[in-house]
Length: 224
Figure 1: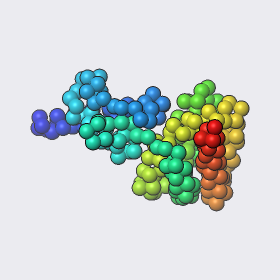
Figure 2: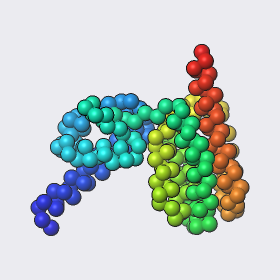
Figure 3: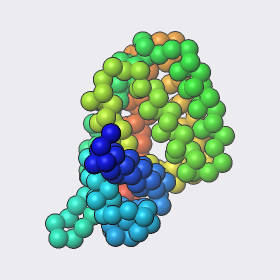
Figure 4: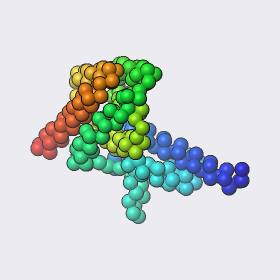
């Protein structure tokens, strides 16, 4: 392998590692929408040049998590409430499709993983743990679909609306979490029975309820 090829591979690996760290920080709420990303600070933190950092941010830009503002650098992407509502309406169509494509191909191992995630969600000790497990649960239900473009869109929508999911958890509070767990249980039951139609209907209602609750909350804030 040539020295140039080794340097290119190392730079690519570094870019992917930086992108993974930033993505995790955004999903955990450590980096918030509208926050500026200073490339020089990241380069210093990772002990690298700004080239891998910029490529990492380009990866995240494709994921919808970062935006570049001309002459003003990179920022964590913001999604306003109107955009969030539109995304949730799209999700109401896309995710049931992905689910129905995935269910017939699910293995017993995947079902066992879903059962474990369902129980772990119910026992989650805090909001951030729940949000991570909830994301894993739903994305796993779609994972057996032979539809990479569809799954890519869904994962992007989940990432760009993460802070609204955090808001929704706050609206429900601990007492309201049982509703989500009950809905997960019904969904898992339908999946286990390979009942695609019932699973689609349950999932569509699950997503729609989140959207309407968010709309109600933000309308209430705007009306004050």
